[in-house]
Amino acid sequence: MEIRHLTSDDLDAVLDIRRRAFGPLSGSAPDTWRRLVSPMLPEGRYLGAFDGPRLIGAARINPYVQWWHGRPLSMGGVAGVTVSPEDRGRGVGRALTHAAVERCAQLGHAVSALYPATTPLYRNAGYEHAGVLQRVTVPAEALRTLGGPAAPVKLRRMGPADAAELVALIGRVHSATRASGPLCFDERTWRLWLDDDDDFCYLAEDGFVVYRWSEGNIEVDNLLAGSEATARALWSMVGTASTVADSVTACADPADPVLWMLRERSKDEVAQTRWMFRLIDLPAAVAGRGFPAAVSVETVVEVTDPLRPGNAGAWLLRVDGGSGSVTRLGDAPGGTAGLAAAGGAATRLAIGGMSALFAGVPTATLRRAGLLAGGSPEADDALDAAFRCAPYMIDYF
Ligand SMILES: CC(C)(COP(=O)(O)OP(=O)(O)OC[C@H]1O[C@@H](n2cnc3c(N)ncnc32)[C@H](O)[C@@H]1OP(=O)(O)O)[C@@H](O)C(=O)NCCC(=O)NCCS
Image 1 (cartoon, rainbow, N blue to C red):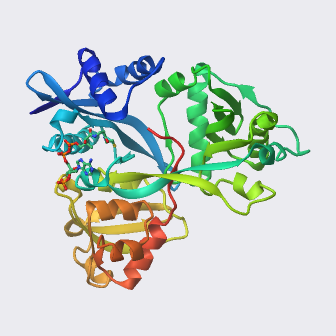
Image 2: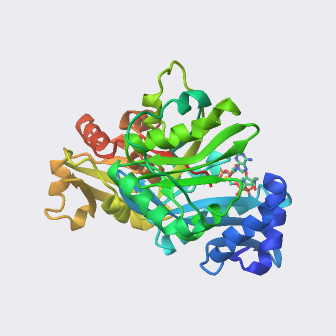
Image 3: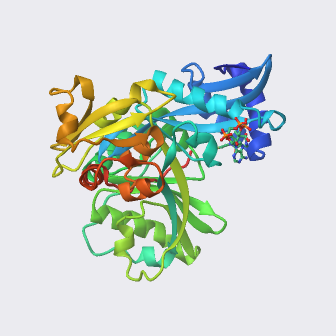
C-alpha cells in the first residue's frame, strides 16, 4: 500500500468510496463537494491510499482556525476518512490516520480535531474526546419575542463577497468572549457556503446568522453575537418564522446567552455530537493558546507520543499573565530544579490525555479514566485552573 496526495484525476474514485461509506450525495452535493475539495488538492490536503493503481482509502485535512481561550490556533480538521468496504479491517484506516497526523504537522497545524464515527481508530492515533457540538431546539415563538424596544440593530443580507469581513468578525467575537473550541473556515470555504441560495445569511456589526428551512421548521447553522442587542436582533428575526415554523433547532454553544434570555427554560431539548482533539505540536499549541489571566502555574508534565516524538518528554509548563509555554526540562533554566519546584513528581500523560487536558477535561476525570498519573493534588488543581474550559464547536465537518 502506498499513501500519496490525491489529484483531480482521483476525485471520481474518491466519490465512489465516499458513496459506499456515507451513502449517496444527491442533487448539487457532488458538485459542491468538488468545489470544496479541489483547491485543497494542490496543497496536499487530500491523502489517498493506493493498492497499485486502485484507490482503497482517503482522508482530508481541512484548513481551519480554532480558538482556545480566545486565541486562534492553526487547526487541521480531519474529515472524509474512508476505506473501501472490501479493503477494511486490514490496517488501511490506521495508516491513513497516522499519515493525516504527520501531514497536519507538515502543514503547520498546531492542533487537529475531528468528528469520529468510531473512537478506537482515532484514539490509537493520539486523539481524545474533547468537546461537543450541541443542537438545541426551542419554540420559534420564544425567539420571536426576544426582540425588545432597544435601539434597533442594523442587519443586512450577506453573500460571498462578505467572506473576509465575516472571518474578521468571527475572530473578534471569539477573542472577546475568550471562546474555546469553535473554528472558523478560511475565506475560500466561506465564499462557497455563503453562495447557497437555500441559506439565509445576515450580518450585523458584531454578529451574523446563517439559517435555513428544514422539513417545515428552521435550522440555525451558525449564529454569533458579540452583544445582547445583536443577539436579540438576530434570534428574534429568526423567530419571526413562528407563524409557519413551530421550532428552531440551532447549533450553539451550550452556554450561548440566548438560553439565558428565554423567558421560559424548564428543560432543554438538546442533541450532542462529540469531537476528538489532538495536539500536533505541543510547544506551539501551548504558546498559542490563551489562558485565564488570573492564573499563575508552574508544574511539570511528562508526555509520551509514539507518533510525534517532538511532543514527548518532560516539560516544564508555565502559565502566567494569560499566556503559557512549555520548556523541555533539561533546557529549562534551573534544569531539574523545575521538577523539584513542582513537588518532585511529574504528572504523566500520553498525548491523548494531554490533548484532553488541554481541552479542559478535568484532571479528576482523566485520572480515573487512566489517562493521567503521577503528579499531586496540588498539580491537578494547577492544571485544572490553567486549562479549564468547556469547548464547543458550532460547525460540523
Ligand atoms: C472506519 C474505517 C475508516 C476504518 O478503516 P479500516 O481500514 O477498516 O480500519 P483498520 O483496519 O485500520 O483498523 C484501525 C482500528 O480501527 C478499529 N476499527 C475499524 N473499524 C471499526 C469499526 N467499524 N468500529 C470500531 N472500530 C473499528 C479497528 O479495530 C482498529 O483498532 P485497533 O488498532 O485497536 O485494532 C472504515 O471502516 C470505513 O471507511 N468506514 C466507513 C466510513 C467511516 O465511518 N469513516 C470514519 C469517519 S470519522
